[in-house]
Every structure is written in structure tokens, then in C-alpha cells.
Image 1: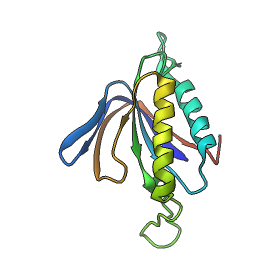
Image 2: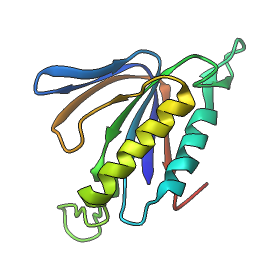
Image 3: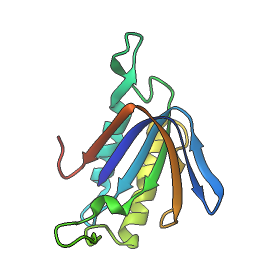
Image 4: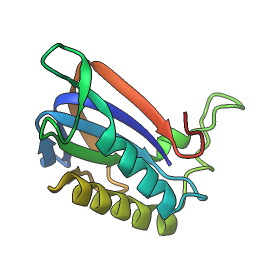
Length: 150
């Protein structure tokens, strides 16, 4: 699994002109799933996201977690995180998992993240054409890959 996590002042996702989800301070997470991903990848990411300390404390040092600031989370499925651009100029999406693998893992990720956060997470709609708006705070943008844990 790969994520791009952005610390935001606010974020929303609109589908066919209707706002599906909107959050205030917290994280916008773009989630990509590949064929080899499992529940263990979900668990590892959830632990890292909940424990990540990238919100400022009283001394303006990134020392607080999403839990410490009572933040919110919006998760958007993003198969393009597995783009292969090795040949030519048109990306290939062969590494992105098929729906029968990615939909259950996306739903599991959102549920486990919601349980760990103690409140619902906002979501987009899997496979929909989504318009995502955000105010990146910092900016703070971090990438994580469960197959390349740094």
C-alpha cells in the first residue's frame, strides 16, 4: 500500500457536484493498493498514521499527533499512486490492484482508521470521478509505502 498524507487546514471531496465528505484540521490521505497488499499492510499504516507527530505544539515544533489535536481524516482511493512511467509517456496502472482486492482493503483501511481515531473518517467513492480540494497546512506532505518502510 502507498499513501500520500497531507496535513490540512480543511479538505473535501465532491462527486457529480455534491460534496461527499468534508473535514476541518487533519489529514487528507490518498491511498493506493497493489495486488500483494494484505491486512498486515493496513494495520501497519493505521498505526503509523495515528502515531505520526506532525502537528505543532505550543513551541511550534511538530510534536503532536492527529489524536492530540482531535483532528479529522479524509481518505481518497488513488490507484494512480502505482503508475509505471518507465516506457513512453503514457503511464501504466498494472501494479494497481483489481477491484476485488482493492475495494475490501480500502474499506478495511477506512474502518480500522476510524476505529483507531475514535470517529468516522470521510471518504470518497471508490472508482468515481472525484474533485478533491484541500488547504495543505505547512505544507506538510509525507509518502509511506508498506513495502518500503523507511
